[in-house]
Image 1 (tube, rainbow, N blue to C red):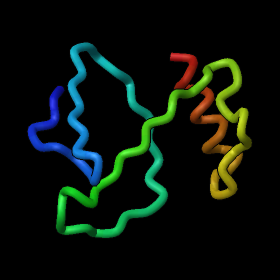
Image 2: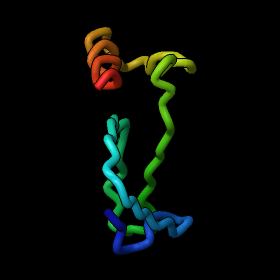
Image 3: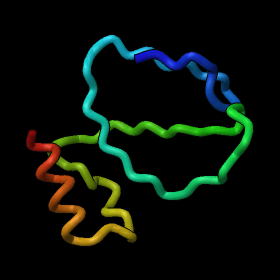
Length: 73
């Protein structure tokens, strides 16, 4: 996978040469019409302690358990 346009204010390109499992949660969007205003935040997850900074307030117990199950795969 490779981005064909630079993304965001920092003009970042993404190139991935192997399969990556991505689990994402969208918190908000701004409906920006300009690609320079887009933002993607990637944060690694420690499989042994995925919520070392605490569970997001908006997550239910079911979502936490589902996330932990996905990490086992």
